[in-house]
Image (cartoon, rainbow, N blue to C red; front, top):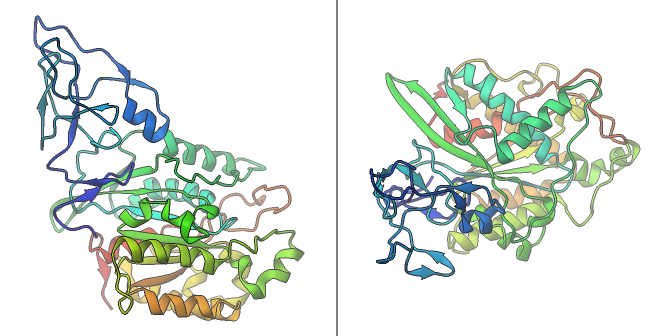
Length: 405
């Protein structure tokens, strides 16, 4: 988790002190003053390619009323905690935004809000998982914890893309979304969620966001270092394709699944480990403190290797707590499976480099798709434990309660 002095912007992952944020004009100026008008924001355009006209940011102006003190091609913002006076129209505004990317900040964002990154090897199903998780969060998980979980910016951007993906997959003959393309230095706006609920008589809230990167973006140290959001994440979800493990290669070919020998589970782990060690200045004899959820996708394809009564094959609990004992049982069995699949060296790297990690098995679809046509099973979407990784990370931070044995 972040310290009390700073968090990160949930959109661009730049370091952010919520006591010193920028503001956007509210559009409610003083009588007699020339009202501000909407225009394209250069920082939004640079960060996300978004040229949508918006009210101007609030900053100092010269005697002619023009924004002054240009910095790097951008006008300087007036930074404050809760509000600022627009120097153009004279109106007061409490519309907070990130000084770096000019995204509007959720009201409940504070310096303890977590940011989570989702990364994985190519073909591990990151976009499919996020698309299904989006619906699971705002419906199933929200009901389970009697919480309000939504996207602060509304159903727009990446959140809308995820909702559309889930809808397309849920139709008869549903089609899987295309693979995420490598982004390199180009930023992609993440899906941001706000969770509010009452715990022990008090209202608690937190903001978390997911960023979907391509497997190619973290398959090498050089590429991984371009993914700066990883270094700012307070928890990372690493999604692995079970068919990418050595002992599952034959099964993959028999099913018509193509795996990339240059994007292996160990490659992805090595990339993440390097970034986190560099960002947090981890000494050679120390372990990374950022919690890592190591998630094996498509676990339904390997249910024949899991006892029928094992928690891994059972639906997630409906209780409004996180069952740590059950999660640990699943962790132990996943370790056994990964060893059986030839991934024992990956487990050794996890033990050597991370203070806290958890092995989790999930299935976004719940039944194997037609791998050749990329269509969902005729049984439809049957998500299995897709929320376990985020719930483990939130329980690890103390935001949701843990079931006591």
